[in-house]
Amino acid sequence: MGFFSWITLDSKRSIPSTYAEDRPTFAVKMHDNLGNEYLEEDYEGYGIFGGTDFYVLLAEMNDLGPDRGKGIDLAFDEDRPASTLWPQFTEHKLPDNFDFTVEPTSCAHQGYFY
Image 1 (cartoon, rainbow, N blue to C red):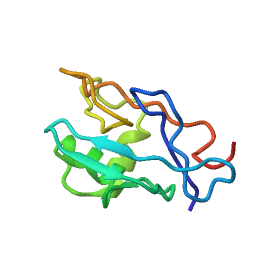
Image 2 (image 1 turned 90 degrees about the horizontal axis):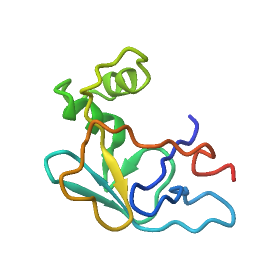
Image 3 (image 1 turned 30 degrees about the vertical axis):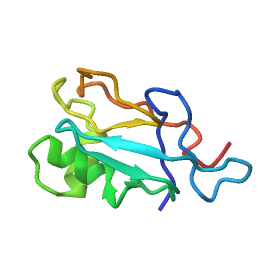
Image 4 (image 1 turned 90 degrees about the vertical axis):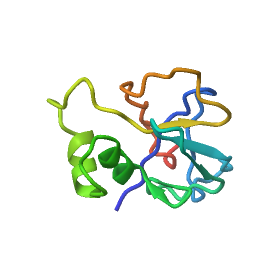
């Protein structure tokens, strides 16, 4: 299994994994469209924030049930609907009235290979 990560919406920083050399982790919030926040203070690089899996949350936000496989399929489906809702990442605060159809930016370094 490889690492994966994203760029925070508000501070535009890569979310490093705890295993990345020379990049300390920092507190990150993953948000859903219902106002829930999942705080992660020591990201391990596998998509789990505050005990919640990004891909499970993606599936749930799009009425696919708590199915990680369906969330992964949706994330990588080039023909997915424009109305797809996405979890979002911040260091501090999500902007008011944020549009959850905006896909979060993936980190090219996977939170590890800097």
